[in-house]
Structure formats: C-alpha cells, structure tokens
Length: 456
Ligand code: HSE
Image 1: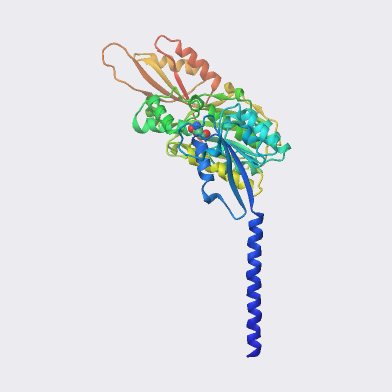
Image 2: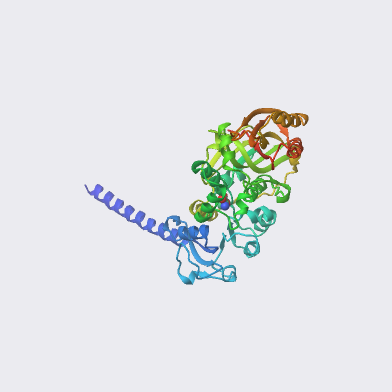
C-alpha cells in the first residue's frame, strides 16, 4: 500500500511537471508567434475582399498572424463595400512604404504605374510583395523577380492566374517541361460568351452586366480584346521557362466580332466558342497565341461556364493534367492572395524563373490549325463553287458546309455561309479570305474563328 501511494505521489508530481511544461510550451509558442504587418495598396473589388479576409480570425494560426496596418487608396471618401477604421486609410503611398512595422505589401490597385514603382521600392526596402497584377508581371516580370531574388523577399503571384494558388505552385515546382497548354484565362469573356448563348443576348448587353458585377478589368478592353488572357499566358510561360515573351510578339485576338449567330452555328456543328490561350513547344520552337476558338462540345474546357477558368496541360513525358477554378471575382482572387500570405508565413518560397531556356516564337502565319469561316454570300448559283475554288487553290480542304437563311423574295440575297476546314496554314487561309472578300458575291468581312481540339 505504502509503495503504491508513493507511486501515486510520484505520478502526481509527474502530472504537475507535464502541466507546467505544457504551459511553458504554450507561452514559448505565444512568444514565438510571428506577426506580419501588412500594407495594402487598393481597396476595390479584390482589395476589399483581402481586407475583409485579413480582419477575419480564420487566417490566424498558432504560429503566425497578419495585422493589417495601412491601406493606401486614391480617394478617402469613396463609397466602398467594406468600411474600415479611418486610421487605416491613407492616400499617401509613403505611409505604407516607409512604415517599419509593415513587412509585407499586397498590391491590388492594378495598372502599370505607380504599381510598378511601388513594388520595386517595397522589394528594395526588403518587404515581401504579393500581387495580382498580371498586366505588370507580363511586362516587367523579369525585373520584378530579379529584385525579389536579390533582396531575398517573398514574391507571391498566385492571384495573377486563374485566381488559383494551386496552378502557379504546381507549374513552378514541376520538374518536367510543358509541351502543350490550352486555357480559358478570362472570366469576363467566358461569362459573356456563356450568357450570350444562355439568354440569346447581344455581346454589348452582356458586357454591361459583367461590368456592373465587377468582373472586368479597369479598362474592359483588356478583357474582351484578349490582352488580360495574353498577360496571364506570358506570366505562366515566364514562370515555367524563364522566358517572359514581349507582349507585342504574341498573336492576340479578342471576342468583339463573335455574334450570337456564330455561337448558335458553332453549336449546330458540335462546338462552343471560347476565348483561349494556347502554347505548344517542339524543341526550341514555341507557338503561343490568344484568340477565340471552337472547342468540341461536352469535353474539357468547352464545358466551363460563366467566370470559370480552366487549363489543360500536357508535359514532355505525356502526363496530362487539368485544373478548373473561378477566374474573376472578389473572393476567389482574395483567397489566392491570402494563400500566398500563408505560404510566405510558413517560409515557403515560390520558385522564381531563374532558368532561362532558349525558345524561338513560331510566326503566326506558319501556324496550322482548322478553321470556321463565315461568309456573307449571295444566295445564287455558282457562289459556293467560287469560294471553294479559291480555298482549294490555297490548299485548304473543306470539311463541312452550312448555309442558313431563307430567301424572302425572288431576288438573290446575302446569307451566312459557314465552312469548317481541315487543317490549313494560317498564311494560306488569310490570303484566301482576302481574295474571297474581294468577290462581288461577298458582302463585308468574312469571319474566321480557329478550331481547336483541346487536350482532354
Ligand atoms: N478581368 C479578369 C477576368 C479578372 O475577367 O478574368 C481576373 O483576372
């Protein structure tokens, strides 16, 4: 008995020692908890979302916390979706850049200047930077990554693409080279094309709605003319190959010319129209382009509706992967930024594109693909023969023909004639169309949309 009560006493002591040690542990952990002082540039749709999430307890962990110290805005009294204590707001960027308690800068103001100067100065001052600014990264990615590396700062760019941290992470860490990628990178365009089809509405009506919801860039032409997609393609290729292509070298075409009629014709032929970014490499030759494309209905990217973005990738070993995620909007983008903050706090570094591969960009006129052509042709004998004769003379073979429209009178009228071609060379197709457009039986410009298979 005596022995056992001593044992209990010993156990008691052990329990109290454990308890004491656990208090010490917790105290130590509290003392070691790292606090990151965050400065935010921009309080628009995305910035408001970031501020809201930062003020939300969920993002704190036992090891670190983020404290929003200052928010730089253009106008103090603008009506916003989030109201912050006025002590947090400033119109003076220096109050953020020169605050020693701010070690991390989040830039979501967009545009090139002063965003570029702010990011460079922040990095030179040793502050970590997280940005969603794909337009800037596409233009000055090499410089920004160089500054981040030289100043040993974290540079987070996850929110610049598909509002998805996973994409950038897996591409940046992948040891094998990408052989082919095709992606829908612009939520606004995908939303517009989806809504045109769903509601039978015109391009301009649906664009207005996208602007009201806040999906579009400051200047919506960046979205609808394909530049936002091109920026994202340049950033992805930059991260994976170390080669930030000059924007001007890329073939970029937007969705302004796509009519509801084309969406319906494409559907009838078994396709949906999407704005896509495409990159393919063969050895050192790289094909990179952005344009609307007909994609086979019911497969891969063609299934994506609304602001959904997606990417399909095939690497050099033949492995195919895909990712789908929202491409625009307050929370998807803000969440990708917060994920970058967490990675930074956990000490993970995003691989920077230091390895510069030698790549030559293939000329667009040498690209080979299939085509959807919409002619506005006179509905009379011999017209199809004229068109197909010219196409044939340029070695362009026709796969399918569709003619729509009823003649209302005995007089010949112009009607849409659609042709799908087999694979042809871009230069030949452009030359053939120029010749066809000059025929008197053709009215206006012929619309050309490329046809792609996708990877999945
Ligand atoms: N305007 C962009 C889009 C927002 O529509 O995808 C995200 O980059």
